[in-house]
Length: 259
Image 1 (tube, rainbow, N blue to C red):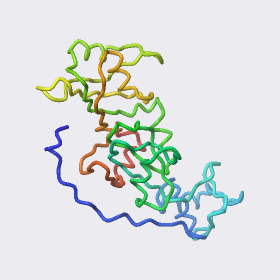
Image 2 (cartoon, rainbow, N blue to C red; image 1 turned 30 degrees about the horizontal axis):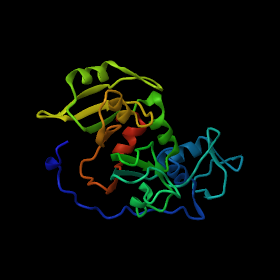
Image 3 (cartoon, one colour; image 1 turned 30 degrees about the vertical axis):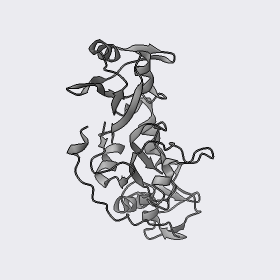
């Protein structure tokens, strides 16, 4: 969590974005929808597992349009290329796609990332900084925000006064807030000689949960930074900047391997 340990960030050129044309090969359409690779898509076509506008298609090289109804296992596919952007959110930005009352939203920070319409996975309140994933992958978003997935989150908490050790123990064993019981999965001082800094690991996605946990015990959170989310870290991403997830990271997220 020591800022002095962070490696310098070298900004990469923007990833080229492939816009869905009026027509494309069926295997590419399937691949863009995130079902599988183009090669595996050809196998699905040959096996008769793909329908176009209600009709079975087994001919390789078939072209389809963006308005065609292409289905796999009865589910209609979306050919828009999936984009995954990891943002290190600064303070003062609202986590929303659109808010007429907000001067700054996280979308302002990623407006040049892609042509696709992406949206935040979960929320960070206006004053909280740190990791925020944005994507147009609805299935991944649903998985990461579902309680059963248990996406691990780690926060660096700065309080207005030293936190007593017995209060850390209370947060670990569990407390009861107005919306039910809650406990930290792991908690400790972030800095050996500064007890106003605490690291807390938690899975819950309840609104302002970390702030409310400390407020319940009489502490005011002066600064809150999410440093870890579902296996992703801020390494190489300065405050206010973003990067694309690697193919390996996306694959592991979808497989539930990144916690």
